[in-house]
Length: 191
Image 1: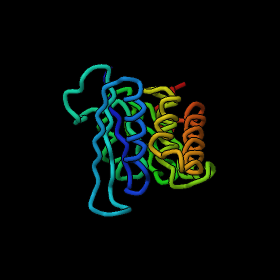
Image 2: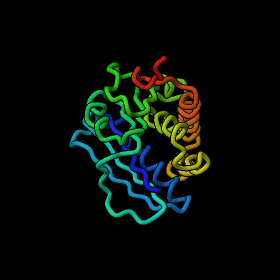
Image 3: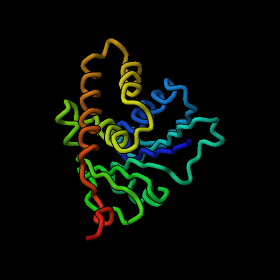
Image 4: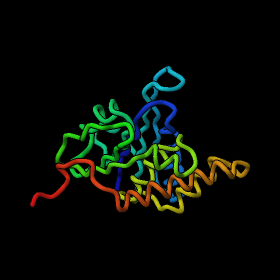
Protein backbone atom coordinates (compact mmCIF):
# COMPACT_ATOMS: atom_id res chain seq x y z
CA UNK A 1 0.00 0.00 0.00
CA UNK A 2 1.27 3.45 -0.94
CA UNK A 3 -0.86 6.59 -0.71
CA UNK A 4 0.12 10.07 -1.78
CA UNK A 5 -1.65 12.98 -0.10
CA UNK A 6 -1.40 16.64 -1.10
CA UNK A 7 -2.30 19.48 1.29
CA UNK A 8 -2.49 22.89 -0.43
CA UNK A 9 -3.57 26.48 0.11
CA UNK A 10 -2.03 29.74 1.32
CA UNK A 11 0.97 30.11 3.62
CA UNK A 12 -0.12 30.63 7.21
CA UNK A 13 -2.96 28.07 7.05
CA UNK A 14 -0.86 25.41 8.78
CA UNK A 15 -0.61 23.05 5.81
CA UNK A 16 3.02 22.12 6.38
CA UNK A 17 2.26 21.46 10.03
CA UNK A 18 -0.73 19.24 9.19
CA UNK A 19 1.41 17.30 6.73
CA UNK A 20 4.11 16.95 9.38
CA UNK A 21 1.53 15.60 11.83
CA UNK A 22 0.36 13.01 9.27
CA UNK A 23 3.96 12.00 8.54
CA UNK A 24 4.85 11.66 12.24
CA UNK A 25 1.74 9.57 12.90
CA UNK A 26 2.67 7.22 10.06
CA UNK A 27 6.26 6.96 11.29
CA UNK A 28 5.00 6.04 14.75
CA UNK A 29 3.06 3.19 13.14
CA UNK A 30 6.25 1.88 11.53
CA UNK A 31 5.35 2.97 8.01
CA UNK A 32 7.64 4.39 5.33
CA UNK A 33 7.03 8.13 4.93
CA UNK A 34 8.01 10.98 2.66
CA UNK A 35 7.12 14.59 3.54
CA UNK A 36 7.97 17.28 1.02
CA UNK A 37 6.99 20.93 1.55
CA UNK A 38 6.66 23.53 -1.19
CA UNK A 39 6.07 27.22 -0.61
CA UNK A 40 6.64 30.63 -2.13
CA UNK A 41 8.96 33.31 -0.74
CA UNK A 42 6.15 35.18 1.04
CA UNK A 43 5.94 34.91 4.82
CA UNK A 44 2.12 34.69 4.82
CA UNK A 45 -0.48 34.57 2.09
CA UNK A 46 1.65 33.03 -0.68
CA UNK A 47 1.06 29.57 -2.06
CA UNK A 48 2.00 26.62 0.12
CA UNK A 49 1.61 22.90 -0.19
CA UNK A 50 3.12 19.68 0.99
CA UNK A 51 3.08 16.14 -0.23
CA UNK A 52 2.99 13.22 2.18
CA UNK A 53 3.47 9.67 1.00
CA UNK A 54 2.65 6.84 3.40
CA UNK A 55 3.62 3.31 2.41
CA UNK A 56 4.16 -0.20 3.72
CA UNK A 57 7.39 -0.50 1.74
CA UNK A 58 10.30 1.81 0.85
CA UNK A 59 9.24 4.86 -1.17
CA UNK A 60 11.00 5.26 -4.51
CA UNK A 61 10.35 8.97 -5.07
CA UNK A 62 8.92 11.87 -3.05
CA UNK A 63 7.16 13.17 -6.17
CA UNK A 64 3.43 12.49 -6.52
CA UNK A 65 2.04 12.69 -10.03
CA UNK A 66 -1.31 11.13 -9.10
CA UNK A 67 -2.55 11.54 -5.53
CA UNK A 68 -4.95 9.31 -3.62
CA UNK A 69 -6.22 12.35 -1.70
CA UNK A 70 -5.89 16.13 -1.68
CA UNK A 71 -6.85 18.80 0.82
CA UNK A 72 -7.45 22.15 -0.89
CA UNK A 73 -8.07 25.21 1.23
CA UNK A 74 -8.11 27.93 -1.47
CA UNK A 75 -9.45 28.37 -5.02
CA UNK A 76 -5.97 28.30 -6.63
CA UNK A 77 -5.21 25.04 -4.79
CA UNK A 78 -8.45 23.51 -6.11
CA UNK A 79 -7.58 24.49 -9.68
CA UNK A 80 -4.05 23.13 -9.44
CA UNK A 81 -4.53 19.87 -7.55
CA UNK A 82 -7.99 18.54 -8.48
CA UNK A 83 -6.61 17.19 -11.80
CA UNK A 84 -3.87 15.28 -9.95
CA UNK A 85 -6.27 12.96 -8.11
CA UNK A 86 -6.62 9.35 -9.20
CA UNK A 87 -10.15 8.25 -10.14
CA UNK A 88 -11.93 7.42 -6.89
CA UNK A 89 -9.58 9.74 -4.97
CA UNK A 90 -10.74 12.02 -2.16
CA UNK A 91 -10.82 15.80 -2.45
CA UNK A 92 -11.35 17.70 0.82
CA UNK A 93 -12.53 21.24 0.03
CA UNK A 94 -12.56 24.21 2.40
CA UNK A 95 -16.07 25.53 1.76
CA UNK A 96 -15.28 28.67 3.75
CA UNK A 97 -13.00 30.02 1.00
CA UNK A 98 -13.94 27.96 -2.05
CA UNK A 99 -17.31 28.63 -3.65
CA UNK A 100 -16.70 26.89 -6.98
CA UNK A 101 -17.58 23.22 -7.16
CA UNK A 102 -14.99 20.71 -8.30
CA UNK A 103 -15.47 19.71 -11.92
CA UNK A 104 -14.54 16.03 -11.85
CA UNK A 105 -17.23 13.38 -11.57
CA UNK A 106 -14.94 10.42 -10.82
CA UNK A 107 -13.74 11.48 -7.37
CA UNK A 108 -15.21 11.71 -3.87
CA UNK A 109 -15.57 15.29 -2.66
CA UNK A 110 -15.92 16.26 0.99
CA UNK A 111 -16.86 19.87 1.63
CA UNK A 112 -15.99 21.20 5.09
CA UNK A 113 -16.42 24.71 6.52
CA UNK A 114 -12.85 24.49 7.83
CA UNK A 115 -12.49 28.06 9.12
CA UNK A 116 -15.81 27.99 10.98
CA UNK A 117 -15.03 24.61 12.54
CA UNK A 118 -11.55 25.78 13.55
CA UNK A 119 -13.01 28.90 15.15
CA UNK A 120 -15.51 26.78 17.11
CA UNK A 121 -12.61 24.58 18.25
CA UNK A 122 -10.84 27.60 19.69
CA UNK A 123 -8.49 28.97 17.00
CA UNK A 124 -9.46 29.90 13.45
CA UNK A 125 -5.86 29.35 12.34
CA UNK A 126 -6.34 25.58 12.68
CA UNK A 127 -8.11 25.14 9.33
CA UNK A 128 -5.57 22.58 8.15
CA UNK A 129 -6.01 20.45 11.27
CA UNK A 130 -9.78 20.45 10.70
CA UNK A 131 -9.20 19.42 7.08
CA UNK A 132 -6.78 16.69 8.21
CA UNK A 133 -9.53 15.35 10.47
CA UNK A 134 -11.96 15.28 7.55
CA UNK A 135 -9.41 13.48 5.40
CA UNK A 136 -8.79 10.85 8.07
CA UNK A 137 -12.53 10.35 8.61
CA UNK A 138 -12.91 9.32 4.98
CA UNK A 139 -9.48 7.75 4.42
CA UNK A 140 -8.07 6.29 7.66
CA UNK A 141 -4.47 6.33 6.44
CA UNK A 142 -3.26 6.30 10.05
CA UNK A 143 -4.92 5.62 13.39
CA UNK A 144 -6.50 8.56 15.20
CA UNK A 145 -4.48 7.77 18.33
CA UNK A 146 -1.27 8.08 16.29
CA UNK A 147 -2.36 11.52 15.07
CA UNK A 148 -3.16 12.65 18.61
CA UNK A 149 0.25 11.42 19.79
CA UNK A 150 1.97 13.17 16.88
CA UNK A 151 0.23 16.45 17.76
CA UNK A 152 1.31 16.12 21.39
CA UNK A 153 4.88 15.33 20.36
CA UNK A 154 5.16 18.20 17.87
CA UNK A 155 3.59 20.79 20.16
CA UNK A 156 5.44 19.72 23.28
CA UNK A 157 4.27 19.37 26.88
CA UNK A 158 4.45 23.08 27.70
CA UNK A 159 1.82 24.07 25.12
CA UNK A 160 -1.21 22.39 26.67
CA UNK A 161 -3.69 25.11 25.57
CA UNK A 162 -2.50 24.91 21.98
CA UNK A 163 -2.70 21.11 22.03
CA UNK A 164 -6.26 21.25 23.38
CA UNK A 165 -7.32 23.52 20.51
CA UNK A 166 -5.57 21.32 17.94
CA UNK A 167 -7.25 18.18 19.30
CA UNK A 168 -10.63 19.92 19.27
CA UNK A 169 -10.05 21.02 15.65
CA UNK A 170 -9.02 17.49 14.66
CA UNK A 171 -12.12 16.03 16.33
CA UNK A 172 -14.37 18.62 14.65
CA UNK A 173 -12.95 17.67 11.25
CA UNK A 174 -13.35 13.96 11.94
CA UNK A 175 -16.94 14.34 13.16
CA UNK A 176 -17.97 16.51 10.22
CA UNK A 177 -16.05 14.27 7.82
CA UNK A 178 -17.97 11.22 8.96
CA UNK A 179 -21.34 12.83 8.34
CA UNK A 180 -20.37 15.72 6.07
CA UNK A 181 -22.00 16.32 2.76
CA UNK A 182 -20.43 16.05 -0.62
CA UNK A 183 -19.58 19.37 -2.24
CA UNK A 184 -19.87 18.08 -5.78
CA UNK A 185 -23.24 17.42 -7.39
CA UNK A 186 -21.47 14.90 -9.60
CA UNK A 187 -20.71 12.84 -6.50
CA UNK A 188 -24.38 12.50 -5.63
CA UNK A 189 -25.84 9.31 -7.11
CA UNK A 190 -28.34 9.83 -9.92
CA UNK A 191 -31.94 8.81 -9.26
